[in-house]
Length: 75
Image (cartoon, rainbow, N blue to C red):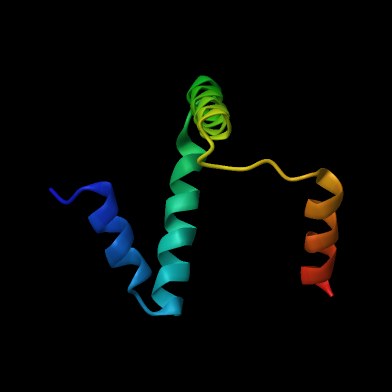
């Protein structure tokens, strides 16, 4: 069975229309998760982000900068 990196690489090589369809199906598949499963996934994601910030893998940005960039992209 291919690993996560191989699956991601294959998915990203799809043409945009097929990538969009795959993304839609993957997101829809999350709708069937229970509330406790969703909470567990969000807790894992929060812990991963915290580790990444602590280790320097990710850098924090001031919220003003984030909102400024978001507004600029929406124009």
